[in-house]
Image (cartoon, rainbow over the protein chains, first blue to last red):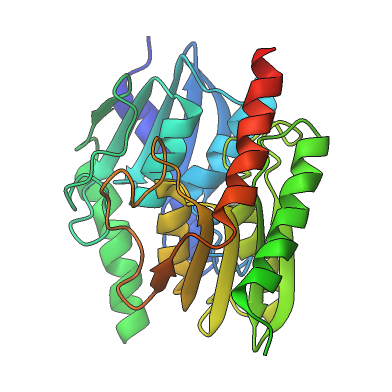
Length: 145
Length: 145
């Protein structure tokens, strides 16, 4: 079976796509039975829509792929800790597992002390955290220069 | 100037549309300078998407109408207290004001004790609460029968 690093690398590929579009570089994929069923990256600028986070879009795409709106049995890999909006959306989706890369001390749902994930959802972080964080750091450094 | 009841009635019209589609009957509108710039209702079943709450869709529609992703100076009227996903989305949108009809003790963001709205957003509830609640009660009564 493929490991977490493999899937997180796929999420990082999505984050790179966002970076190239001058979007905050966050990427996400959703797997079911070990297969990647949806991919997305942050598109808030491109779509002129604050709700167009990578997670929100990948939830919608995965539901389309499965033909049902609940993501039971699915795992989300996302490069950055989900914000409260995305954590609460993942609650509604009843997703099985959430694995994130780097923490987001400022806007991350867990980092801010909220318990928004579904009690049945397993949440863990720190997978390829350095690579995920570097993309963010480089993006904001570039923005400030 | 038109009052809150007028605008909430418009949100209730949207909730009725949801009811007729066998969707949880929640409706929302967004105003800017007293003008309604966006209308939406819950479409989670129709779109097979847990993120398709009335508020999420009306945020996207209002941003389209304004041509900018932030909803500063806007007011949201929504028939039911927003859930954490929608409250956090409204945070990102930096909306000026949120006015809801009936409280949602089970899933409402404030009712659950979260502080997810932007500190600059004014939030109030109870406008035409009875009408807004009745739609929900009738919907779930019908579902159970």
